[in-house]
Image (tube, rainbow, N blue to C red; front, side):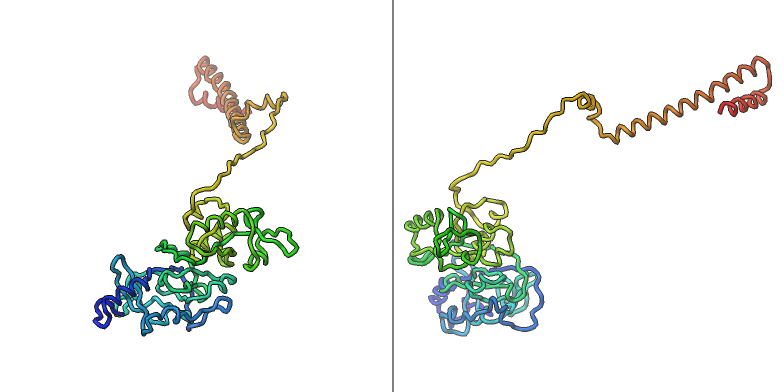
Length: 369
């Protein structure tokens, strides 16, 4: 590709307008190692790739102009079928993160450059086991664009860099994800009016209205926002499969852009704060850990045994064995020493030779055993 800033066929006013309208924040998704895609499949049938050319081709030209940078961003030309209909490593030969202007790959370059992905329908893929993430490349596209690596066979690691706050258009709808049906905060009712809880089929049916204190709280806040309506919805199957907690699954849907916000009584954990930011607390719980006090033994043997408590029984056994061995050695020494001393004294009194004295000592020792 080439830089449209140097293209005389593209007026400066057009470049600035397209830079504002087609602003793209490069680096939308980084995935881990993925299997090789032998051809260009249309994705898993439960989360198929979709054609977004009509959404992106606003300038009716052969290319899409994607912008990256600050106040005066550089523009990069992308093919107008970028991300549409097929699973491909769409970013592999594109500027600025994966390749040079002539298509030569950058070295080194991010892992996402070689990962296959495509744009998908958010509502369809929420009911599949594949990841869904809001695209940051064309944030002004309407409707919003969502993509998936999992439907193309690529393994995914969350990538939430470059997430930014955007200006809300008056009259738009804000999607709010709820972690579960929990009375009285956010719940639904069966046709007979009884309260439903958990995350069963009723939870995933968005046509059934939500009730509860959190719903009323959110609706009260809506009057202070430019949104025309709030849409309350369920978590994606991918997030629920990835995390054991329904609440962390809701947080992940917000982090990936599947939903805009989540309202509930969340525990603020390190795992969740690594994914998203939380608002100010609306309440706190004081928790205390209760443990049963052990019953004290006051009997004679209990008191007597306290002497041995500083050391383990194995240490006491070792001490007893060492004392026994030392006692045996001392007894042997004294038993051998007494006959020898008596033999030497007798040899001196009788004035015998040392050789004869040694013989006498040996005999005394042998007879002492």
